Image (cartoon, rainbow, N blue to C red; front, side):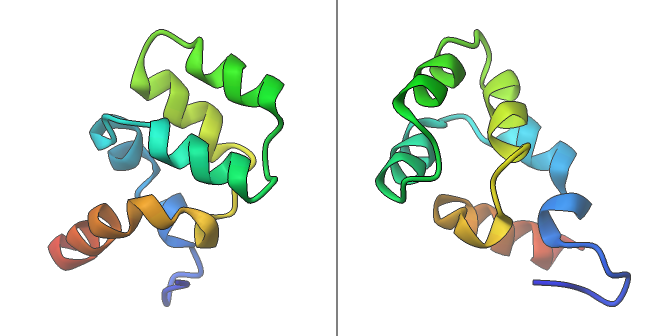
Length: 81
């Protein structure tokens, strides 16, 4: 969702998403199912040592609207802002 400042939710909360997502597996699985990442991309993200590094890699190319597994965290963060 875009807000009055013109920034998308993911842009506004990028740091929190990187710090607070602790399981990237379901996100990567959905991205594969949607054909948004290749198996090579999947494996390269999974090979990163920390979930923070994995989230940085995920957030680079992925549209926020497709990040269904982040909806509970998005709702929580929107309620706290």
